[in-house]
Image 1 (tube, helix red, strand yellow):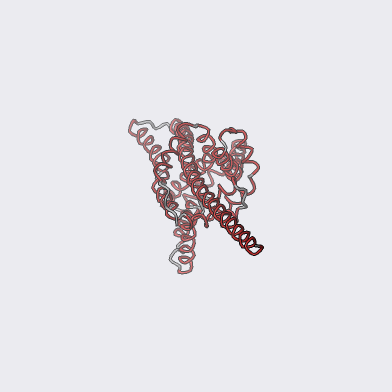
Image 2 (image 1 turned 60 degrees about the vertical axis):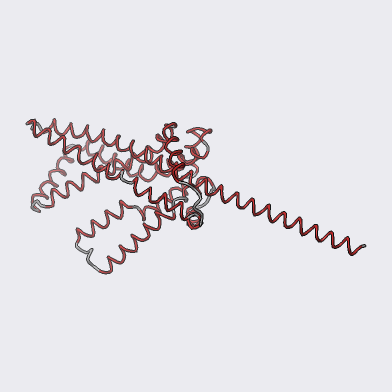
Length: 326
């Protein structure tokens, strides 16, 4: 177990890196923009669900039929919405693997520039897509959505369901400690997704102390999700309260204002998430390079020691042969 790497210098270097190089933030923002939009849509859906939960079933159905009738009367608008949904779905699956690969490639070879990094991301699309698909099982948001849905369905008290949830939670916890080096192994070393996960687990076990320190920092810095909730939920409600206080009751003004506010907040949230994503990726990259450098040095020393031992053995053998000849 190695713990000779101090985390503070790496954190400082990571902060300086993203402060000096805007390309990192731009590449990371590409990764987070789709997540930010989907997050906003999910929050809006949850708010509507909470508000409509107390309404009568008939009233809720009436609202649903009103939406259906609106889309039937405005078929072009409905087409735009469907196209937007398809675009988001495709972007959700296609953009992150490319952007992740480009970001790591740029960190590893910044002198080659952003275009070369994007090309590297495209070349590694399939292994990164496969890895991201595997990691979706251990995604906190998906876990949270699943648990809340089971709670709403009233089956969370079932013993079998509780056991499955506990096993799932343990797998997620395990992945947050042992899988951090997988992406770097895929992009930099050319590992396949499964082999990268195995190698990442091995690296973590060999460097458990430093990895655990950075995992704890990860949890601390994941306050960004709380910031998302504040930005996306609290601020629009503040504007609604302002409209109400000022006596503005024009529905169209309120609607268009909300559209503009949500659009700005989506971009702002994506940018904030891009900064944090760039920071996390940068410092995990530096940790990865540090521990692999230490391993390479140890392997080199081991080879040199073995070579010296072989030389000494050969010299002793030659000496014995000379003595026998004499």
